[in-house]
Length: 267
Image (cartoon, rainbow, N blue to C red):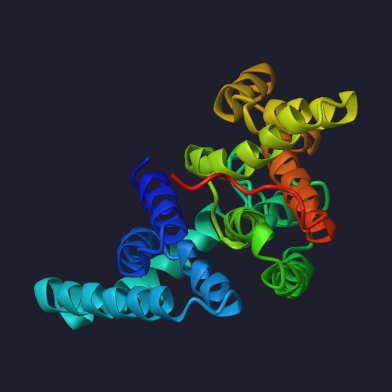
């Protein structure tokens, strides 16, 4: 929730031309978890130089303070050894809803009580890299299109939030509150144009990301205990990840939206 608060507060400050304040909150979120660092790319493409410089500066200050307090060796050990170990241990976990988590649980190595669809971990690692690069490049292209239309700045930020969840090596569902903003954009669209198609899409995404993944995983394990869960067990836990992917696809299409569409009103 703290990360969500920092990201939403940073976005709110940015919209009210408080670039240094937004840079501070974005930096705090990045220092807590690395994946909000993708906002640097958003600020760069949107050419918000003050917020970009402020965010980088606060990150440097935060890292410097951390190294001074705990020691440079501990920082290096965490960044090089512990992070890599956690990614290797949890990337294929059934509760990881990033692109890496999806590919790993289908084609990676066995994790806990669940069997993958096919055990090809080396190819899975290559596929994760290729998909991540593809998502990043496509997002950059869409952000560049949105940057040319000021009315789409909220959509651009929302797309950045969703993309960072997909590209993060590990994305647990407890970080999903950051989707409040992009989901709010879709809700506003439905309010302005109450078409059944918009409502169905909104409800489908909301349903997927709201699925109780922990309870589903525990239920599947209890059914087959003490045997390993077959591959379909991992497939049945893909609901939240599918919701995030659907939201990403919807937001990438908003680069074509009519520039007359309103953004959230500034106070």
